[in-house]
Image 1 (tube, rainbow, N blue to C red):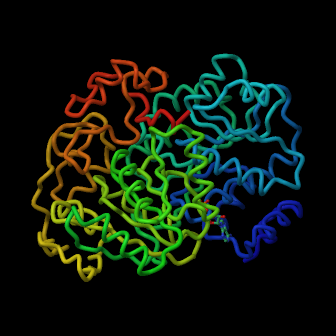
Image 2: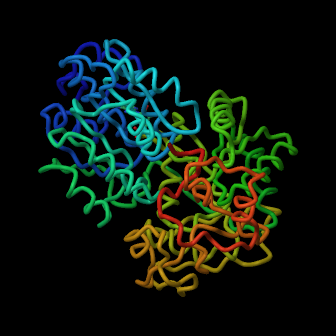
Length: 484
Ligand code: AMP
């Protein structure tokens, strides 16, 4: 099948050819004709499947045929959970639409609102936005949706996971009832289906990856190693295999900083990207990583969301994620759109329960490779997929939990607490201190303020050992600098 056979115009085909794509990916082959027919679409597709072009190309095609957006009006709205993803989708819109006279804009928080108001004033055919800033702009009457034709909800599962449900509902309430709706989600949990009910109308359902499958183009293995040896074994692996571009996942922000410093000191250029970094610092780190000036990017889960680095060859899990589904998302950073990639997890004995849950989820035992000189003194027990896990970490499902994902992820059939100790989104970093998970919103940021070290209330909320901010309005599980 070719892109030309999908009914796209010459200008779009030219832009696609320029990108070097010759064959539509499965999601594109199915979504593009459905969107062009004006149907609602509900698609289960992970990042890496080409889903962005799957909705952007037909969107551009449809919009190129109608009237341009009048002042303050938006014709198509793409909602994304994170700033990085918004920027990424915005880039795709620019790239694929470069031969068309359509106007697009990207808006998210953490940057000045003035230029965004100016852009919206002129009218925007495609607006890519994170929910928080979009609502701010709407409340300031900077944008009007009365002529909206299409709504795209990208990474809907992440939207819910990050607590955006209230913002999404508010946004839906201000959109015209008659519109085309496209919803993309890595998985279709019960919560997502519930959201879809009030959103899509008689949708074409598309599923291109089995639920929670990892791309089979990714070679995955684990390296059993003592916790204290993880940084050293990573240095050895990078040097030994001459890995030039490595995305490393750290569970915590402090851990990410520490590791980046450590690598730098060993002569491996590294940068950390997480929610405590300013938007400018994050953009710079990503650009340097993409250009090859920085060899290792150490990221937390939330910060890494939406990073689209073409053909990323190497992903390393410095720590295993607390939620097994995050493993699948992390691995999705490599082996994208058919390219091969490698994902290595450094696993210490205390992570055995996390490992077991991941293996149960992906239904495979990961190959183990012990690195010479780094044989663990604390043995990593064998995992057996036929046996149920021991059920450490079981506890009451916390109010911020991911809903059905949690239930699904627990082999014992009971809900798993992210940390197992009722700490909501706080978690232990490597040194045993309690730290906000990247993505956790402090009391201040939940009210829209930037976290400020000088603010005693904020300082208190992130102090080691402090209790989570229970009773806060459950808004965004936000990383103040990640979301709008
Ligand atoms: P996405 O799933 O939208 O994040 O896309 C994943 C990656 O696949 C991006 O780097 C795209 O540039 C690339 N891509 C999208 N469509 C195609 C295609 N038809 N052929 C080759 N690469 C593609």
